[in-house]
Length: 225
Image (tube, rainbow, N blue to C red; front, side):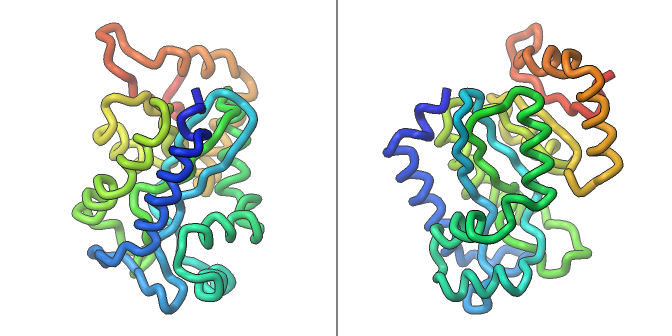
């Protein structure tokens, strides 16, 4: 299943798209994009693993970058390799967002490559605001749809209700699985307990990627009983 992303041509295509991403200068409504200050579009990370069952994990948008992350991008330059470099060189890959999500999706059987990404690639200008609909629409069409097209019909796993909603509407030709955002501690922890207690229920549920009419399903595991 993962031959397409592991092939040289696809990795080159991902790198090419990543370069376009970090240099995006649209400055959409409601977001912060200041390359000279180390505030750049980010969040697109290819995480290679040995398993066969691949997926794309989609969040909402990056959190506000800390000083060390901004300094890293300023020092390394505005290029896609800076994004993947920071993921490896810092402790980012071991933060709750990545560590807990990876543990849960692996428990569900997704043991292969992960493409980490977001609906919108820039952080909010004001973290108390919501992402404008126009910004979501532009970034999904400009980047997310092209990113997902690089893989061979991957399952899309969404984090949080907004990511689930927009992916379910934007990708009718893909199987969508919704789980709580790992920083929503109560909901995420509760789902983890339920999966640990009755993993067969959830693996059976996600084994049915299409409904009785042959359409791809979009299911939120939080509501599976």
